[in-house]
Length: 204
Image (cartoon, rainbow, N blue to C red):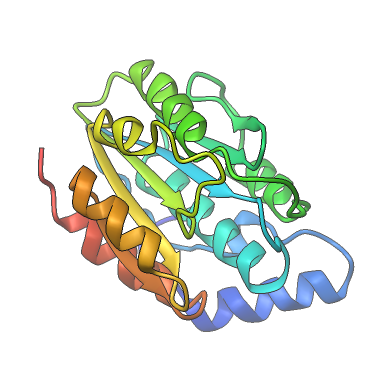
């Protein structure tokens, strides 16, 4: 996967084709660019407490592929509902296609332990050597247990939230108290545009 940028048309066509064939899309079907930036570590935190299928699955997969390309040396993926699952630890070497395939099998369930998920993201990023350590949260930020969420978010070096466009109240509130950057996702096609914009705003 060398050079270029995200080819949205081809990515979406191939993801849909792969799902129609009953298989997971490969990394090279989702992303063709090499956005690697030195000194960057990323932890993707995926909320799986609600309906995790269709567009939400594809959005999470595209975000994971982008994180692997942006920070190929140091990246982690966490999923959370009532419990936290470290899908890809920071210090584990695993192909991005394996991580994407795991994400495409997720199903939503349970309550939302957002504070614990953000604390786990911080724990993963502590292991990274990069100067810039970014937590990318895919969630509506409606925590079932709200105690400690603002504190956990504020303890992160940098937090970026990608949220469903039809449910932003809790996202805006968390961004205000924690200083997080955020963007609203209307469709999976918004993911690369938002990441380009929000990642360009380095505030540390």
